[in-house]
Length: 143
Image (cartoon, rainbow, N blue to C red):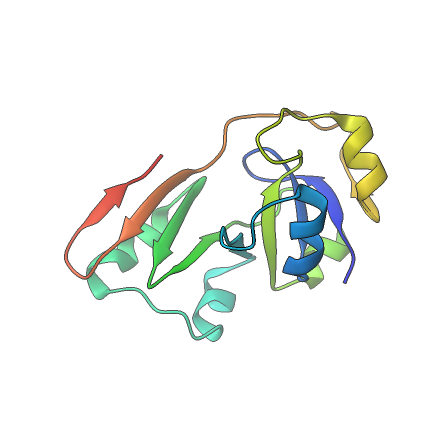
């Protein structure tokens, strides 16, 4: 699978269905998993992942929010870019487009990406998504 550099719903990100390639690019510890981004709630439901009934409403209404449930990090984010490549993918692993613990560097990103998708505004580093851990009873904000 290819590494895609694009503006995500939150910030500039690398997307791929190959987590190993992303680990290599980011020089990241394999014990720190990536967020799995689904293109729709339907694709999330079809993936087999589940959340407690009390959290389903929050998941449906979430904007720029990631969740952790049963050890899996995920987010549902419709693409805002008019790209057939992104529309065809039901899910991707997502990570910010930088080396681990470093700031965004366009030259680094262009060297590592196989495909670059951007609109006329270009790529811009913005804040990351909110992150909540979902338990059976409560949800807890992590960032």
